[in-house]
Amino acid sequence: MMTAGCFSAFAADELVIFNREYYAVKDLNSTDIWKLKELLISADKGAAKNAGVILGRHYVRQGELDRGYKLLKENLDDSYFDRFMRINAHLWVYDAALKSKDDDIVKIEKEYLAKETLDDKADKAFRIYCSQEKLNIDSENVKACINRTVPDKKPESVFDLKPVVKAVPSVTAVAAVPVVVPSPSAPVVILPEAPKTAMAPRVAEEKPAVQPAEPAPTPEIIPEPVKEQPVKQPAGTRGKVVVNVLNSFQNPEIVEAMLYTISRQKVSVELDFKGDKSYYDYVIDAGSATITSNGTTYSFAAGRKENMKKACELAVTMGAKLIVLGYSEGFKDTAAEIADSFKGTAQFMLFNIQEKDFQGRMREFKNKAGGQPLSYVISGTQEQVLKVLPFLKYYSPRPDKTVIVNAVDTVSKKYVTGEYGEFAKNTYVVTDLVVSESAAAETFAADFTKDFNKAPVISDFIGHDFIQFIEKNRNPSAGNEYLSSIKEVQKGSVKREAGAYRIIGGGKLTKMEN
Image (cartoon, rainbow, N blue to C red; front, side, top):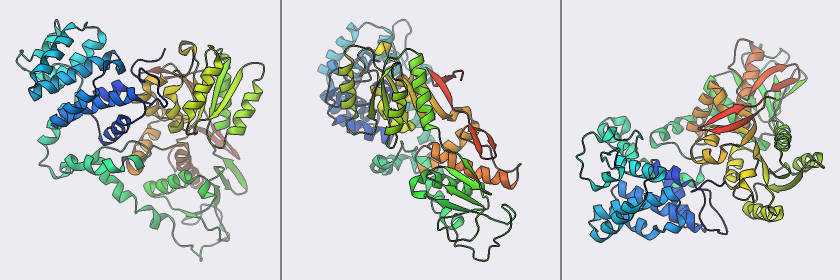
């Protein structure tokens, strides 16, 4: 069934992806605040009301009492909250009223909270609130903490949640250290830039790291053509390997990652984009993700088509009869071909997941289903699939019977934890790369994200692997390990071990037998 708290209680023209509980308990950064402000004015009234109280609570905790209290009062509407958010909202209004000395509201909210049954959701809300306010909790009477009658002995040990308010003292304590001085002002600087990034910006102290990384690659990696270069020596015997890069505009991520890897590893590789030299050690076609050496071409391309087909096969094997197949730009014909291959086994409905009104298409499919359970295979990059993932069960007439098997080029922690974790739980994914399976891939992803303020996609890992291929050809013991799940490279053949996984929650995946 649809998880409570993920969507508004009432239908809207456009439902908005929004995990209430995730934002209700986390330390909001500048990007979170920007997103919540966007939700506050969205057409989805439920999302707007939830965002309003979460923002209100944030401002109260940051010392902007009047601003926060106003938002809380304006957006308090139980009809739009699930159980957990409803208890939170009333606790937050009570707290703001108490701090504002608004005795009438304090009395109303205290009476309201006293009448609420202390179930799991309420217990969690009370414990989180009292921990954030540094109030001791009586395990036999959790609600009593809001009376503020129990002396605060050791508030840090009340509830092991690491609440956000504890981060503020720790920063203040070391504010005298020069390295930390920029942190308090960073959110003001980052906030206007948030809409331009591909992912949530890193915390403020990581921002300066981007500055030295940007100017370095260009002068080091793309020097002027070396006219005096010998033209008849075999690959790898000269001081610098020269690579002719074709169709760079078709896959700029590959080129970006190659330049980044050359700079990081300080390898002697020159990428030439002009094609006017008389000799090249390698030719890389960024568009097709191939590299040619000594007349032999190796394809490093991701298996988007193969993974899409494998995901459909898995969905059918699991009993799916009516399948919505979502594809990204450039894969319409591939999707149609795959759907046609399952004629007589399952019925397919196709749509482009990058359409602006993709929710309209999904409502259309739900109506056509006529009460039958809809299953889904969504294919694309992680960011493309995550945009659609939260709506899949919502737009199925029988969410309890819905089978979801997505084909995703790269799966990182973002897919299986945090805001998207509950939507991914108990679904399946076919992918070329699970980043968490490789320590080297995790390190590369972390460094790349820090330096570029966006997560790497499969093309970035392939760009890295092109450089490793060149280095290993120069010296078999040189180069780092491949990151894009490449298990074997033989003459003219690159074997990548794509896999199917079940996501079991808590950020854990179980690999299925091939």
